[in-house]
Length: 103
Image 1 (cartoon, rainbow, N blue to C red):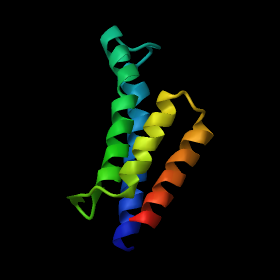
Image 2: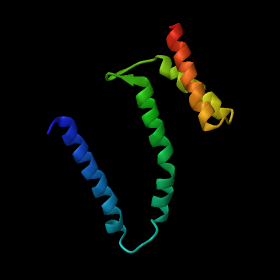
Image 3: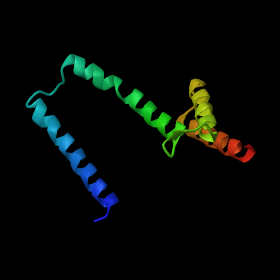
């Protein structure tokens, strides 16, 4: 078994373990504590932003500023203008492609 397969198996096992731990920890309760529920509602946005920032600004373990950042900025403007998801993705892809052609 190569390293990539081992990592995938371990990640899958960890995911299933975390999903199984939820009912075990909560027991018969159907709701989380108030503070924990508020925290769970707030977490997805910053986690997604951290993933976007990492994939946009880091390459080969170092900071980079390239066409991906221009695409992200264009997507942010499209979101600010309340464009739908498909338009946001197309604007980001087109901006990234144009910047890569020009630079």
